[in-house]
Amino acid sequence: MKKFLIAVIAVCAVTPLAAQEMEPPPIVEASHNAVAAFLQLTDEQLADWDVIYRIHRDAEQPLQDEIAAVQAEIGALFEAGDPDPEAVGELMIERHGLAEALFDVHLVYHEGFVALLDETQAKRLHFIARADDAQKFIPAFKLFELIPRR
Image 1: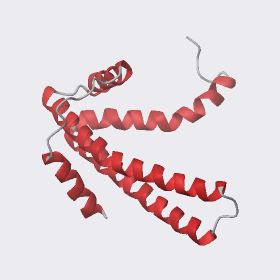
Image 2 (image 1 turned 180 degrees about the horizontal axis):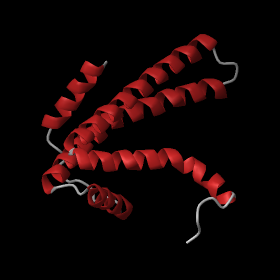
Image 3 (image 1 turned 90 degrees about the vertical axis):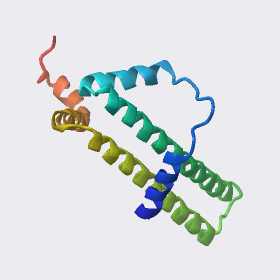
């Protein structure tokens, strides 16, 4: 499966981009700039990141479309009433396989991004990942006033 995904991503890399790309929404551009500033990415890293991000988006879109189509089929079976368990099971297995393929696309993208970073930048990214893990606990600490108010 990974060899297939790598092949898909490689094909996307050599496929020319659409003649006209849409401008990203302001929140996307601001987020891109925030990541670049926090990690202190160089111009070369930014260019490489943009390439692997486009490859990632191009690889994930068909999978997302397939997942949506399979999910619609599952929904239609249930809406019709008394769905065939075998048909539902086959579709669920298909959807699971597509979700795993989508996860692999994201993993390849993440690994590619991390490979662009130097040691200091990788540590900064790791800090953000740990902060994201801890975020679910912050409300509890605030409730008991264990985080100083500013």
